[in-house]
Length: 287
Ligand code: UTP
Image 1 (tube, protein in one colour):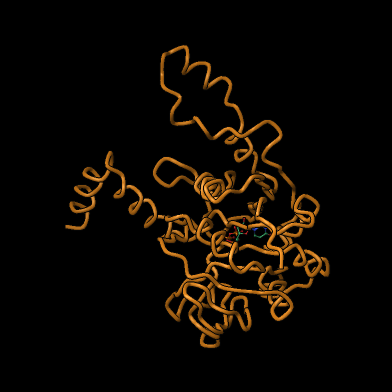
Image 2: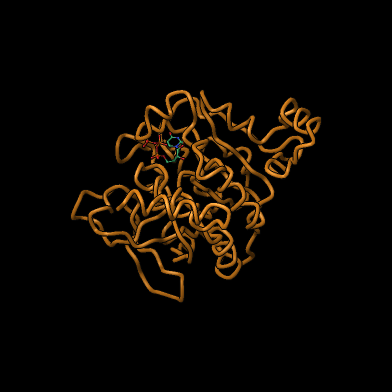
């Protein structure tokens, strides 16, 4: 089996972010900041660090702030330069001309549909999918790419969550364990409470083979009436290698308010320039 390298990453950012209203009424959820960086930048940096060469955003209306964020900010840069201010904070965000690629989903019909919208750009190669509202600390995609180099096929990140949370996620029915890799017998999207096959869910990082696009062509709807990526992936089980990967590092669910606040606290406490102040302030608040 030849294992083709993963060069492309799809970032579905066309969701409406209803759980974060009113913040997301006019601003994309992916531009919410954790400490001083928008969520989307954390995810793009994770992908670049994993060796991804082409960034593909699947966007919708109201998402132009994302495009601006990765472009030249001419007026800002010029004024900062004229005032002798350092551009270090925005260095490295701007991409090469012609990159990233932006595609419109037009209607938020589900994560599977968003991924399918990238089919022409993905072409006949394996690709990664990163959901930017899941903030990963510790290079989750890099670890997955390393595992992929060994086993190929399809790999999804896998994370244990408490049983009462499984109904919110895509859940894995696990098979044989091989170190951090776990075989996948079945996948279920948002199982009804009490019916999940395990506590092992998929926290928004995927390496997929292009055949999944042919399954998504059928535009079958699943949980919530949406075209679900999980359902399309489930159809590849048994036809192609399919593994879960228990990554090391922290995951913050920033699509959820409590998870988002936790991410801000955790990342601020990990920064030397902020930790002492934040620690004092948090202690005082809790007292
Ligand atoms: P979510 O399930 O978090 O949906 O999508 P959402 O719309 O962003 O947020 P809520 O639930 O209304 O608060 C998971 C990921 O899939 C993308 C979202 O942008 C997010 O990154 N997505 C979802 C799309 O790009 N298109 C869709 O049709 C649905």
